[in-house]
Image 1 (cartoon, helix red, strand yellow):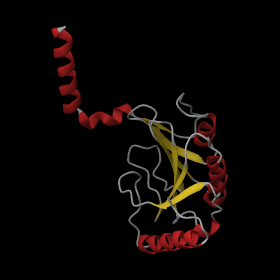
Image 2 (cartoon, one colour):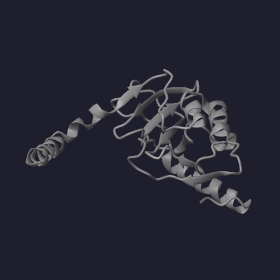
Image 3 (tube, rainbow, N blue to C red):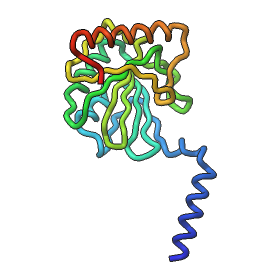
Length: 184
């Protein structure tokens, strides 16, 4: 019993000291077909949409983030599938600027929108209005739309138009609220 206690403590210390190696627990992907048992069939279909060009799974369990291109047409296609998911609320976060992959991913290409998946298997869509114009969005009524200022969740470009994009997002959400579609 004492061996297990000391072994566990030693392993914990080793993991703390090598914390910079957490990236080793992630797998990076391109366009290959993916699936995780914690994901629903609908979520797996979105993950494997033809617009996906990059992503990662990890570092813990089935958490993941995937990047997509293809502009407004690809976004509408994925959003329609996303709105049909039954196991959780459909949340869409609007970001200013463009999406920029982190350094370990297989591409440096900016992306139009992203899907993040939590440990619970719930997905969230993130759209960058510097790549997909607000005017081109047809958001289904059951999708919860919100402004996102989550720095660090997804890398965001630091472009000069981000302030303009932020004001456009605020105006878009205000218009939705006036139409009886409040963000939640």
